Image (cartoon, rainbow, N blue to C red):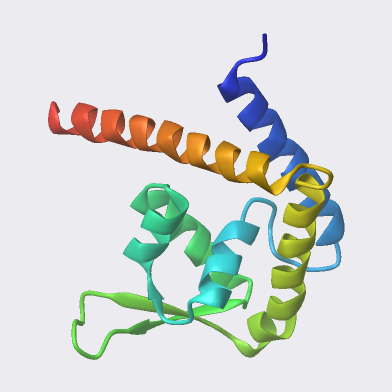
Length: 146
């Protein structure tokens, strides 16, 4: 029997491979597409919210955001009400490719569930959310022990 972790990793790698091919003409680096997508759909998103949305650490987000900024796709702006917050926005260059990135993600997601009944998709999503919740709960528990 295949383990859930092994299958999840294989699905992720395969989807990244398809996205890499589809985005070969765009200068967004491999693995940065998810970050770009969230920013493009949530202009002004704080870095912390980006971290939460993608279930990654703040330092990882900071590095990738720095790359997206240096590549000219994103810029930061201090929040006017809370100067501690950096809000993220697309540059003109980012806006020029945002619709393509969003539609390509939708296309790949649609492809990934092709010929799978909606009830199976919903059940699988529910189970995966429970698995994620279990892992996140353990992560929090372990981080409070330090």
